[in-house]
Image (cartoon, rainbow, N blue to C red; front, side):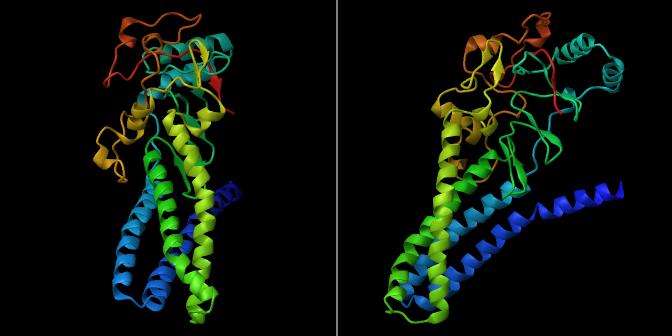
Length: 332
């Protein structure tokens, strides 16, 4: 028991190593750009001021979005999705799979769930003992079910999901802008150092390495940001891109695709003035989502199972569907 706790403690500590690495690289880039480039290498005061003002605006947005990506806790399903003590006792004491299946159907009767597993099952997490909302998945690293989980990112030591997906996208965007701005403003002085027009040895090392690091990170982040732009344009998560969500009529990779503009609004909200700021502005609560077709939005998943009562078909939250899914997904 003590050994297990010690291993978990070491795992939690080591999980912060990538964040520490990123933090150290950013701090060094700040020093190299502000001190070695702007204060030592540049001689024109106007150029110094202009470079520093633009740099600090981008730097603040970059650090702000990274901070929000790291420290915004993932959202977990509401208590209504968890099994009650009585239901848990009944479920665990029952050995017949078909009866367990019926117990889950009864529990899910009034929950806003539309997706199911590939074998026609209610999406149930046996670790968290809950019926999983649409687009919710269990993260083995965080040991919890995360609403609209996209992926677990080691570079932010956090699950990227409903609560912080906007912050993560903005972090990628401002990271690209940060690297691009550094590379564009440093390049001229790299050439001067390379041709020995400038001779400061210490600053030469920092400026040359600054360009190399900026270009390297820019190229790697460009593909990642482009991929997530493609995902958001189709209203998919990374998990859904690899495994399409299953609806009443089977898997549908475009099940939540509402069109480009509405897809953007799902993450960024309708107030465009907040789109570029790491402030919560997205739509919904992470438990239910509008679906692509009216037909799918009005019909719960009741394939070969008993029908929902009328009280389970009410629409709430400005068109966000409510319904029930059927059958069982046992997470192992």
